[in-house]
Image 1 (spheres, helix red, strand yellow):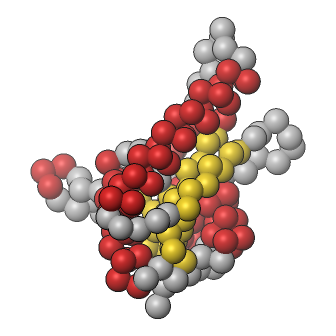
Image 2 (cartoon, helix red, strand yellow; image 1 turned 120 degrees about the vertical axis):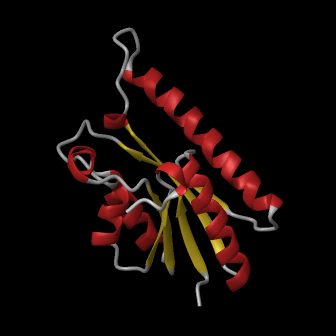
Amino acid sequence: MYKRILVAVDGSDTSELVLRQAIELARAHGARLRLVHVVDELGVKLEPTRTLDDFWRAARKAAERILDQARARALKAGIEPETKLLEIRTLGALVRRVATVIVAESERWRADLVVIGTHGRRGLSKLVLGSVADGVVRTCGRPVLLIRTMGRKGKSAR
């Protein structure tokens, strides 16, 4: 039985499916829900006229909007979620991947289940872009539920 469900959201269509499934699981199990969003400064190209401080202000504002929207959806479904904004700062010697941050939060919060979406990339695009979901599955010591987005023509991505 799941009592603590950690859900990674990013504002994408896949994230909407993830949230819907997590809400249903939380409702069925009477579980607490924690919604997390990761801001990664490596994931955004900084315009030459913007400072790193400008980036962080804009990134936090966008992340808070994503978390607020996800929280509102959960509240509408009768679930009172917690939200947490996670940041990856790469200015030090250690560069942490998004998956590592999600796994660390699942351990810190003692999640019984991690729910995350996958875009179903294959081949070269997966090799080049990597996969946060794959990283979470490979390194998480907790159960992970992957929610796959639908591919072209309504077929499930593989």
